[in-house]
Image (cartoon, rainbow, N blue to C red; front, side, top):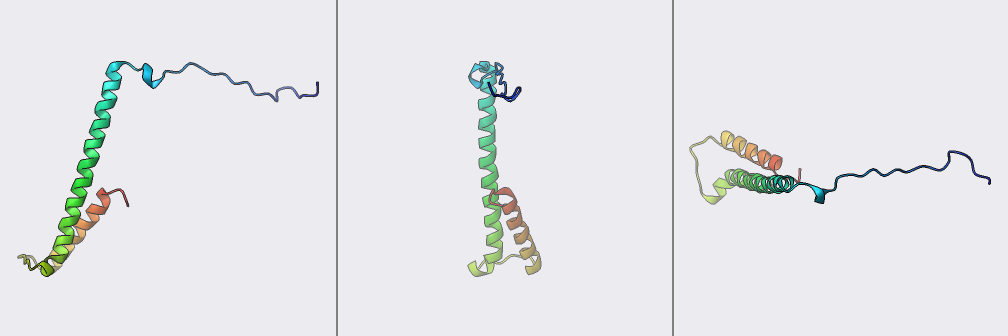
Length: 93
């Protein structure tokens, strides 16, 4: 035989716990945490969109015929902060 010693790798598989083998309480916690993450992401996306629309509305308020008792500089600064916060909440940035 013309094979070199130690060139063949030895693979050992150890038994591991499967996800299906988890206790029902653990599966319930996983479902609750998954549902919490889904609710939280919906709330984050919704608030991001609301804040973004407020910022866009403040930028375009004079075109809609809406006037505020704010100075234009403060209105534009607040609108810019709202839009920046929108981009921070939404996943495309």
